[in-house]
Image (cartoon, rainbow over the protein chains, first blue to last red):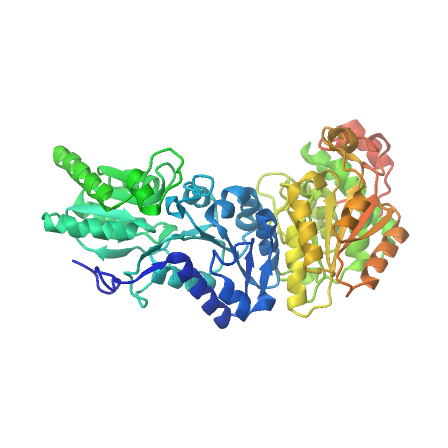
Length: 327
Length: 280
């Protein structure tokens, strides 16, 4: 059963990139809060930060190709009450500057919003140097950090507005390609609260980011085959809404996790950890299996690396077989 | 705040440093002893501060960032002597459940600390960000930062230097503790820094040179830096210092970068440093 409080349409007609959701959200944050400032490391167009820069030139800071300095300057800008939003690709927002984030932002408890575009394989043709698949794991490990990975354009905009309202460091992960807009712009959005997009009792699909739409597509196909899947949208990976996941596992008895990220250290690991602690059930993972990406079109890469609706369906079949054997 | 003359305060701070490091058999006395004069001058004469009501934002106050966080003993002594927290707390330095962590941190809520430091090269960026906010908030206050000379080997320092000049952060005065030493030996041998004055100048900064143990010279450098506020240029003061200053057997060598004196060495050190404000 589709939850219409969250879902606008299961047959969306509009495709938009999540980074544009960030750009629109950031502009709105700038209008609402004069303490919001933005920094960008030479990727203003790619991050869709132009509108903020034009509207608030005094509150926009071009950093050049110097991401380590950007993180430090942003941390310093919180002293005196500003809310800095940093913008660059996910790779340069995390791995390149891990120690700066760790010491000057997370350990120092600074109210910096690390906004990261072009995450994962769907960055496409630029290839593995830019396709980070480890960022969720790195950010999730940091004490004090909140990690958010929204599902579509509308949700990325909502998330951008929401993180401006909360105190503390945030990693906001979004992407490059245009993908279906299926979430309602007025969907209830609460940081740390999973959205149950479809209800079902046969299997739980726990998805984040671009894989949420793939999970919904898979669930529709599964419905036609008589399998009722529950689809959970984990837009907040940290703090993880363990209670909602465990509650679903108790009803379905098995789960598939889906993410555009390494299997090690990502959402799948966290769900497995939560299940092991509270309600162990068979779990299968849709994720990149300990490899780097490569050049290609986003859809080609998602197919090759097994990160699409078909891959989710196959894992559902596999996990339900395992669950049947156990029961 | 004590009305003692700065040299007397400095002598007590040096006693605090060697006693703190001895008390836990751990810490960094050499660099701490070499930066006593600049911190004494900043916190007891130069800076507009509000130690009785510390808050993170520091609106209307001058701000200080210690980028070379390993010289925490000198900063902790200065902060306590300036009234940020009880002097008796210096005895907890580096011990379990202390607010005085090995390197400065905010998590334990020690008044006076606004940014964790220890992993080198990060403090200049933070100071620049804070200085830009002072401008956004229409404050005429000043932001100060302190760095080790060895620390300038970190690339982020030069990213920050480029940025500060580009964005005309002229309400910032950064000090470099030029003691010519780092853990593995003299900086010239480990990784030569070249002509630092020319380097900073080429990056668009105003460069001031002075003796880091001479209060009058430091005062003059700060005044010169402040005089040109509004010209769009950040300021760096390259202070010639001696590591281990004030304790003869620690002076001028990297050997005392990160080790503590034993009981006999402590006694010898304290014999060279007058107790002026009362030991903790």
